[in-house]
Each structure stands twice: as C-alpha cells, then as structure tokens.
Length: 139
Image 1: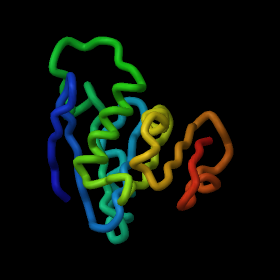
Image 2: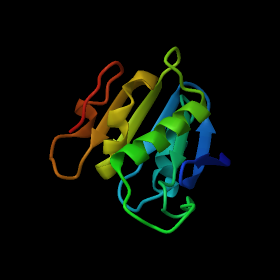
Image 3: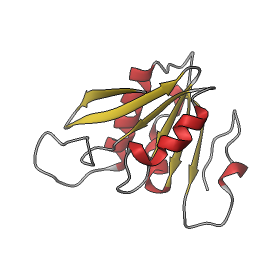
Image 4: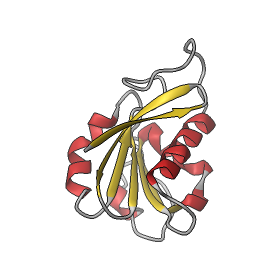
C-alpha cells in the first residue's frame, strides 16, 4: 500500500493506493476514513488499483483554514481530483463505489467514470443490484 497526499482547494487529502489494474475509488460516508475500506481494498487489489481516502476535514485530511460548511460539490471535486491523480481519464475511466453520504460525491463527474454505485443504509435493496460494469445508479 502506498500512502500519499493531494493538495486540493481548501484542504490536503490523505489517500491510499493498493494493487494494479483499472482504478476503483472507494468513497466512505460520514466520519469514516480510508481505514474503513482497508479490508475491502485489500481483497480487491488483485484486480484493481484501489484508491481510498479521508474526506476533507476528516482524520488525516486537514482543512487549510477554519472549519466551515462543506458542499457535495466540494467533495465531488475532491474525488474527481483523486481519480485524475490515480490515472483515470475519459479514455481509461474508473470504477467508483460510495456508501452512505459518500455516494453523493460521485454524481457530479461521470465522464471520468466507467461505472459507479452508491449504497445507502436507508434502503433494504442490496447494493449488488446496481454494481455492474457499464451501469450507473444508486440505491
């Protein structure tokens, strides 16, 4: 596993990269950080370049200034910048999985994604129903 940082407007993001293959970005929800997806990332690293990160203002991703309101657009821009840093392009798009509030970050930048899946604890529908290559959607 490689541990890296990425400067983004208003913060410095801590992120972790495991494995090789197509980029797969895992976006955690709430106050969780990259460690929450550590076991899953380890399982997927034989097929994907798995990127996990601490969202801005959380854990090891400090804000540049005083804490304040944050928008879904800011979180989406952070995730997009991580995809670019990991090598995702329109020609070589990434897979993205977001759970809970992490799923909202993916909605603003589909051109760099091959497929994405979002899961929420508010539904009983299994996440696997939307996590197929070439599909987009959320539950």
